[in-house]
Amino acid sequence: MRGDVFRAAKQSELLAALLGTGTQLLVMALGSIIGALASSMYVDKGALTVSGLGLYAVTSILAGFVSGSFYRSSHFPKEGKKWKYSMFLTASLMPSLAGTVVIAMSVVAAYHRTLNAVPVGTMASIFLAWLAVSLPLVIVGTYLGRSLCGRVKAPMRVNPEPRPVSNRPLYAHPAVLSIAAGLLPFASIVIELYFVLTSFWGYRFYFVYGFMLAIFVILILVTACSSVVVTYAILSGEDHRWHWAAFGAGASSAAYVFLYASYYFLFKTSMHGLLQTSVYFGYTLLGCAALGMATGTVGYASASTFVRLIYGQLRAD
Image (cartoon, rainbow, N blue to C red; front, top):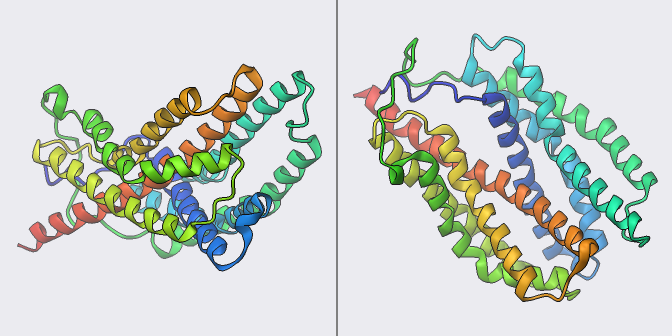
């Protein structure tokens, strides 16, 4: 069991991209909240959006750094050339998702001949900004991560072949544990989530960013604790497949947020028709995807620290 805990996760290229993007989104969210607290941006949703996009572009170097260092340390010294694929995936994961959703909403808006469609010139400008700023910063961050933090070795030797995992009851399956773990982080933000949705879709000003910062910190702490508990349960069952389960334990809270947003749409708004439905669920999907990557990163980082601490102590003994 000890020799398999630090085995590289399956689809580690995707996991590295998710961790890098999640770290980037966490810093962007924290910076946006602090910026709103320190200024009067809350009176202008457009200014808050522009500042968020700017922070996303600038923090791309951090996404590349985290992704590159994680992939390098997971596969050192035999990593082949897949690190380049992981680097490109890190740079394009969130922008491609956002672009697909925005284009789909724009097509629906154009069909209904409304002004909600994003102009082609605006989308082209954002793409050029990604190409000129975000992508180069991800590349630089990846090389920095690989050179500075990529040689961190596992606390103990990894077995050449993975140990077979015995069948477990359904309630103890890693996927089931991960899904159940998302309930606690969701419960910690559900009240604030109602006010955020009301502000966004009710066209009201949201100005209690100090309380939002406190909820943000609570969400991180609860997500970290939930992921550690799930990881401990998995390892106690002699199962070394903890990587994606730890990420999923944090990210699953976004699924509950999406379900709550669907409930809010059906019972708390009077929206109807294809246009309003596409806009609502388009932005909701983007928000939940970003939340899932961010909280999944918190979950994995907490579980990874926990695993290294306990197995490093075993090695010392």
